[in-house]
Image (cartoon, rainbow, N blue to C red; front, side):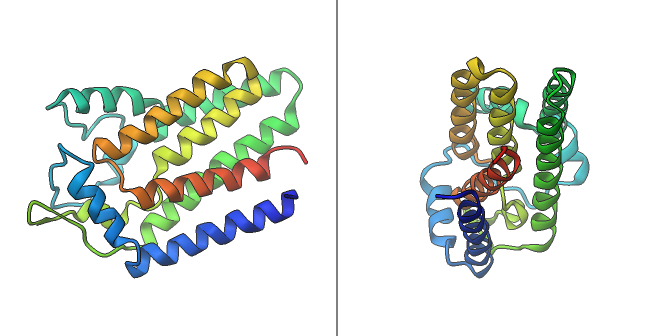
Length: 207
């Protein structure tokens, strides 16, 4: 598939998924996930604040072993931490004379986080429930920023150090699984993050 076709297909898929999430067409899947795949999910009556989203581990729970593992493994995908890591990778590319690649990945990173923020501020999904209580935080959790940043970070790291691809990909895979098991995100959030990251990777890579 050509780059243009891949771009159009991924963009269309991302837009279609946004419509499905907003209209509640995937609520059944996300609710099933809440009921059967998130053993330690604690209902929260409020949406996460900007401060909680920005400061690493500010609102983290440490009650169970799963909480501890998830918090540690997913930490590199947190907004500030991952941005610092991505910035260092872009700096490494720049210093190696690969300035076009550095700029392309920097733009992809900024664009991805901007799209994530825009979607979360404008798209509201139907309420999900856990133990008879509304999960308000999931109303504005699409797409998953952790998913977006973990996949993008793998691509950027692999551009700088190709030999690190296997380890970076293993970390990203573990992150995606733990985002679900620990109750950070539902399946449609993760799929949205994957589609957005894939779109940006296609755009950032040289043709």
